[in-house]
Image (cartoon, rainbow, N blue to C red; front, side):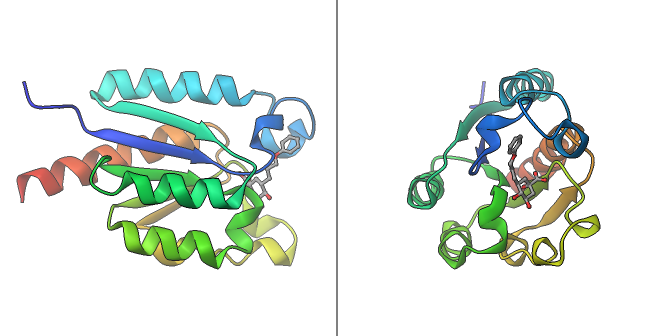
Length: 152
Ligand code: CA2
């Protein structure tokens, strides 16, 4: 059987704190709960899941670089780096993989500084405001993109 498509799911700074504070914004689930949801959906779709979190911009950049040739797509919740990081944008642009941007909260209902995303310039699609379900929807979108590319 052909190898399963492999999806890199990256989570940026402070997302390791999920479930401990601000449940009205980010929900009550922990990052481990989100990972379990992604693994269940990945198993259903036949996708390998590599789920990671880092508080360090450079580590996220390195992981994005390493995905080139090794992963089929990237799901990225870059946390606050979404709104600041040209380095992450450059890495995403260079990696030449489909990128789907995810946010738990609806960044457009929040402070103006969250309305701009550098990540969006490299993303095939953006899902925000749907909590952890956004990760599941993003995996479904990645699955379609990856399988469509495999057939072309
Ligand atoms: O809505 C999202 O997913 C965000 O990417 C989350 C980031 C925020 O800076 C973005 O604007 C939108 C922040 C993640 C911090 O998460 C925490 C959760 C609980 C307690 C503390 C932080």
